[in-house]
Length: 585
Image 1 (cartoon, helix red, strand yellow):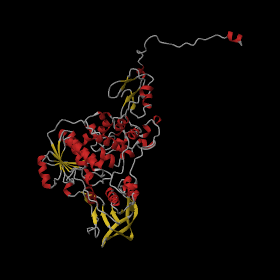
Image 2 (cartoon, rainbow, N blue to C red):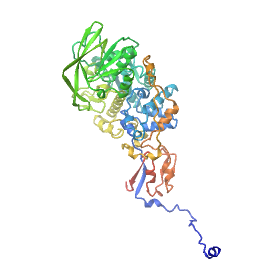
Image 3 (cartoon, rainbow, N blue to C red):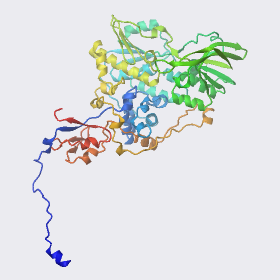
Image 4 (cartoon, one colour):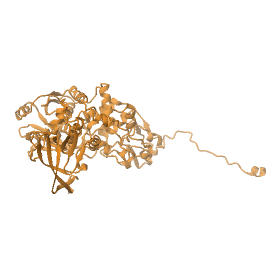
């Protein structure tokens, strides 16, 4: 073996090494594809009627920047504490994380940020345009009217809000139960709007004479009167004593009245008002029975509210249409017509028809009507025809021949009756008025299209005011565009609630607060779809060292002298915040 080893020749292993810089070798000249930083739109933001920048809120939240995250919400929605409690959060239904494990609990984080801001008395720093000469009158201090005044003030206008009730808030103050929205929370949100410079005048009865005078004193009027009158059943006996308006009943409770019930109570309807009435009755000692002419799955009330009502003992009777009410001393007989499903309506709900002549009698101690609301006065509604009328997504703008401007919003124009849609209506009206005064009537629709979030109808005030969000594209990131290799499955935060036994004894808030640690952990589950969160994957994976960190808004840039366009940075971006383009683009 030794002799064989001696006969072997040793071949030296040499490595070529340059003795001079390779900076003159501009490998970027080889490139025919060009990587770019290009932030896009998250699906949750596009699904939010108020167009909140959800992905950025969660990103700031994970960094412990609570005030900045809260201010990011305030750029698009003046009611984070309210919406964190009562919004049906359509954003979560579109969350890409839902295809990975569970959607991010966006509403819980929003509420946490708002409650933290209230507890620490944060004062928001919001961009506000220079003052304008025009003054705007807002009729109604509900969510749409207050939102319109809020955004108009940010745009530089002076706003006076006129409210007939003794306190501002509209449906938020007089219709939503205390166990969903405490008065102190609402008052804090309204106080912040007033501190911005909005003047709210309560106890002001709004008549046609008042409106006529306001047209002479103001450059425009926003009509946000809401729907405060319950629709009639149009059946015999509905006007007898013992048959009451559900919305008025909720208002009395919010004013401090606490009537007691000692037997079954029928609530006719299937919307949120009906469910709220039923749940209030349970807390006042009664047994609630919701009578609905369609099926439970067709009820327009929010699913979560229906589920909690069932947990609290509310009974739902389906496919029963009220036909007659009769008084029998201390009891009432509600005669109902049995209904059957006969296909589908155009909105996807069950189409129904009477099941022959079959009827049923239900004996109760009280009956509440809650089949939907309408405007208290017909002149609250927008006109059907006008030569200068623009029907927008959530509002209607009318300019008459004498130069007067009326904008209708909130429940008067929204197809979906919710708080966040009311906020969207007020924002849309504010932007439309600003475009009208700055650019003219004909520019309104095209200008609004430039500040939509994604490809839907939601608008961004930050984009309209030409903030950093302007740099985003309208492309909505889908799940398949997320690099999920960089994420781990993590359980969604569990919403703490009062026990059912405790709920029935009090009107205290049901949903409890989550801790800061839980809120940050939940925000960390967010994919931040389409947004750069400075993860540095592009920096670490670039084979040409062409990613350069800097102090600019992006935090980095690409040195195209050396970038060969291999696309590794784009592939390894977890959030689809980069894109490859052809070099000539």
